[in-house]
Image (cartoon, rainbow, N blue to C red; front, side, top):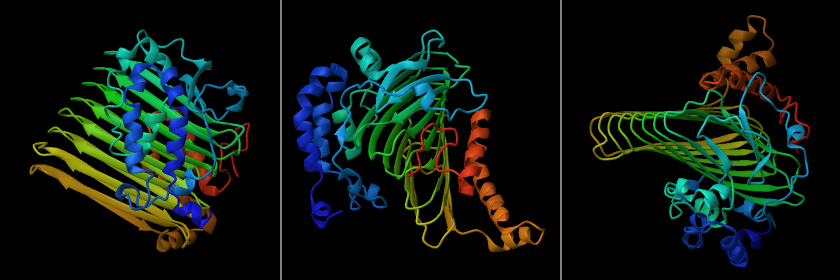
Length: 455
């Protein structure tokens, strides 16, 4: 990367592109998607692409990711691969409602969503915006374009993604599984916009899997807004397994009503640069939020988990627990923010981040934060960064276990606590298997993929 490119205001390139395609974006999209588009673009221009000078991005340098000359995926393109054959990283014994998203666009072909319970909708957000815009009445109300330039850029370019609606008191016996593929003939910039609405008393589990099908360079900017109604239960599992030339910018916003329970669980097994933005708003009494995550990275990969939990009402509880294993020259960051607003009394909020560095060149930045404006609360946070305990390693070796196996046992034990919080047993077993292979260095991709995702 040249010095000139480093110093250039990269946002000018994206400003020019938006002005070039704006008319087409507005003509092709429904009013509900167009309404915030121009303001979002103005918010992006005023903020620019995040640099390390942005407090919320101080540990992640996004500038290089925006330099390549990408082709933009503004239109639905024919899928040139058989998705059912290209993706064979299945989870044994996992029975799901399956849907595909290809370069940010929802595809019916190959999807298996026809037997969903009555009233449940899993569809293209573009189609819903045209046919049932009333279901998107809260679109762009959680993801504030003035707060984050990545969200602003997504909202300005948003065309499609998935839409999930679960009506009142509906319980899905099988999880929803969303397979997000990236494949293009040239380096590609992908914008994906998703929306989930879980009504009162409903119960649903969602599994999202991110994969690349060839070795081109990708920048994927995804935003998901999730509304969890009163007394509803929602679980969201994300499996990230993309090659080293991929930048995955993933922003998820969740609003919870009274007596609801929402859980997110991120498993990062491979990826070039990954930034997970996650914001919860506990907007009803007795709501419970659980945020779990784990990352296993090596080479020069980078993963940054940025979480925010806003306790906006009394008698709510949140738990954050993230673990990372970093090898080679990998870098990582975790910033967890808990904000207890005034009058949100009887709050229980806990946060923990533990990190294991396998080499002297691996680095980790961790920044737990508490902002407490109420006086009757229980809040705690903690973080650790260290290497394998040599005394414990010696203990295992003294009992006849060779060093490589002893190290693997200790790393698996380190990861176990987070893996076991996955409530879907077949998925938990599969991730246990993938984590074991990842720690052994055997795979940087699922061993059953038809495409070699490692670069």
